[in-house]
Image (cartoon, rainbow, N blue to C red; front, side):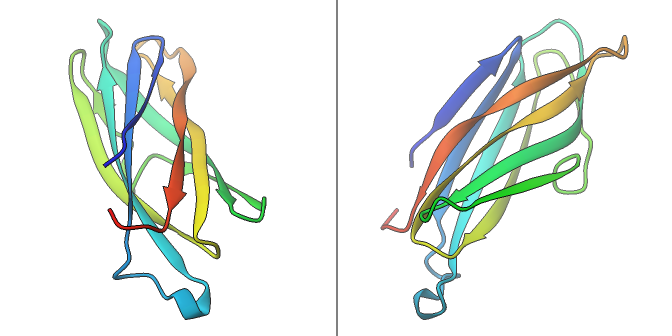
Amino acid sequence: MLEYEALTDTIRVIVRPIYLDGQTDIMSGRFVFGYFIRIENEGSQEVQLLRRHWFINDGTGKVQEVEGEGVVGNQPVIESGGFHEYNSYCVLETFEGSMEGSYLMQRPSGERFRVVIPRFNLRAAAN
């Protein structure tokens, strides 16, 4: 499984995408991709993930922008030296595409900052 990684300030984001062929319906143009994300706090202070902001690109160049609170219904606090993991999925109308984006984080002081979610490729192929 391919792994994509980005480090912003002291926050590392690691993404592992996977094609979900069992959920896909090729005849209907419904290609399903899962992704596993690990967010590591390499800093000396805890941080809280407040919001997510995604750009989902399909194979035709169409871009869907998705923004919302937290991840999978949570706004996790990530302790110094700790991590948060979650998984989710997206559905494309094409057999390939990509995703990228950012998280809005907050330090105990109230300072907010953006963390890069690295661009990762989505391809309908054997895993």
